[in-house]
Amino acid sequence: MIEFRTGVEVGQRYVIHSHVGTGGFASVWRASDKQLNRDVAIKRLLRKGFGSPDGEADAIREAQKSARLVHPNIVQVYDIVHLSSPPEPPESLIVMEFVDGRSLHQILREKAMRSEVFPLDQGISLLRDILAGVAYAHSSNICHRDLTPLNILLSSAGSPKIADFGIARVLQESNSPGVAQTSTHGGTGNPIFMSPEQARGEQADFLSDLFMVGIVGYLLITGRHPFAHSSGLFEIPELIQNPEYLPDVPRPPSSLTAVQQRNYREYAAVVVRMLQRERASRFGSARDAILALEAVQPFVECPQCGERLRERDRFCSSCGLRLDSRPEEGENGGSETGGESPEDPNTLVERGFQLTREQHWEQAVGIYRRAIEQAPGLQRAYWYLGFALNHLGRFEEAVDALNCGVGLPTSNPEHTSQFLYALAFAYMNLKRYPEALQHVEKALVLQPRSSRTIFLRARINTELGRNPEALRDANEVLRLNPEHAGAIRLVQVLGGSPDLRS
Image (cartoon, rainbow, N blue to C red; front, side, top):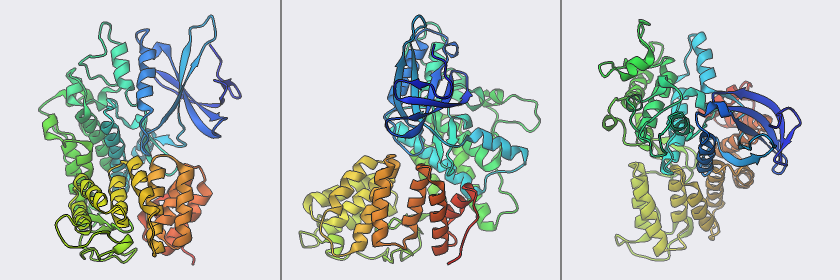
């Protein structure tokens, strides 16, 4: 077996730097990828962590399945390296995205020792991002089965990234002699985060993942485990399995304003619904849970620039678009057909926009595609379509739609800037950071004082490990908009202090 130490090269490509840690089934090492000039994490599977000879091979197969998950809130699997050093048996390494941060478990423990919890907006933002990662995995038919704070890493910019999709199933099956791949046992690596059905030995599914995210959400807003009894007389797994025990409904701290307390109660209701014992009583999907969180403070995203606005706003505070107006004929590229029939492309685009305001995003996508079929030169239909696809996390499709639209002629440079921003957003979520940075820089040439575009560049810079540049951008955003919550949080995470000097 090859000895891992600083400077050792494996697979003729990866150079070991340092040992990160060791868990139940693997040790993790930080390394550099010579070909792509980036840091990676190498997971070296421990044979003692698997109860059968096939366990390691199953883990590799699960990692190969997970490699197709490309999402900003999921730790990406890059490569599988097979090593052979006779007479030792061959082994395989999983090469993954390196997250320069700590686990949510570590951060929650530190806060608990200081009797602190996450600020409400930050806790809910983390919960929403975790749900977004889970929803994306579920859309690819991949279930996690072991969602705990230990498997959620926070990047240096504070973004959550979920690790180890599929490993829980492998561990359970490889430690159950005679149990085949079609086992109906749920299994998890941590019994205090099991769903009730997993604790009963039933098969884990997407709604089991949702229950586990509910436990994480409860921890985020209260600092406590929902099944930890205040008396200390009960074990957590015991109460998870007890059908008569119901977690306390979180109560808002008295230090919050009346509006904040109302929001807290509504967010808590969303978390409690995820924790229902019966699957049928939970949300139908992680996407439904996200919509419920967003409904607490209703908002609309401007279809022209993507700015988040209050639902009652009539005008976009960023680009000035009137939100309750009928789109003008020929706006943003013009139409190739006339008239006001129900199938008129402009009417279709307007109908799609109204559907997005009502959160019917999938229906809106279909409407926009119909508009494009009828008027291939209708530029704003491509913009609305790309915007909706970005919202749904279908980033590859968004790139295709936006690239079709950005090449159409326009007399308004703001329209081009909006396309470039949306493309940069999609590329960032696909982890194609150089392309994202290239497009965001082009957008800033056209609109140099756009706070949302500068903030997007800050986020891209954090992903590229360029924290000084990210801090500079975040402070620039605050000079333009001193109340920008995302920029304030990013400055705090990066260890700076807001610089509001003009």
